[in-house]
Length: 191
Figure 1 (cartoon, rainbow, N blue to C red):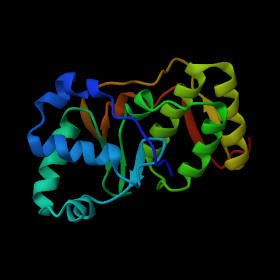
Figure 2 (figure 1 turned 135 degrees about the horizontal axis):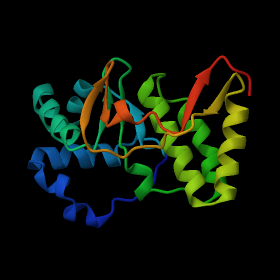
Figure 3 (figure 1 turned 30 degrees about the horizontal axis):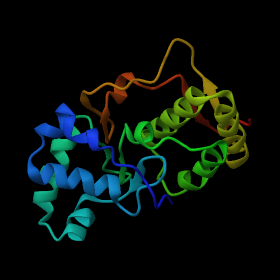
Figure 4 (figure 1 turned 45 degrees about the vertical axis):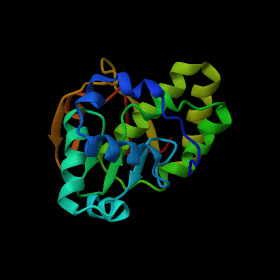
């Protein structure tokens, strides 16, 4: 689990963040700095549980969370209890290929759902985008960690960083319905 993360001071210049109420801003900053937030920018949590940690009424936290969700700053799968921050890795990139390899430990903490797949797609895109060494580290680490699954290339599709909130099953994400990404995690196939 990641104990250190960056909160870029430019967050105060972000149009979406500025549109949040004071409770919305505090609720979002709470997510970024939450001790259970993994280095992948996702964590398993419930909204009532997060409200209790802040000593807020559940409805108050739900309203603050909904603001960030509407701005595309957070994604949520209520059924799987997975919360993800789509731009987390952009502001907390891995420092080395070894950090990318350590992401495997964070994956085990996340419940299986479409949003988890989207988080992994973003992580892979980030690693590949940094350098060949980072991309290779991702491929090797996840091939070992998920021997019964493989990353299957889907041509003509690229990860989206859309800002529209839309339901996908029980998963509410920033453009997830049109962002299945270039790679999809396919269960049951041997790498």
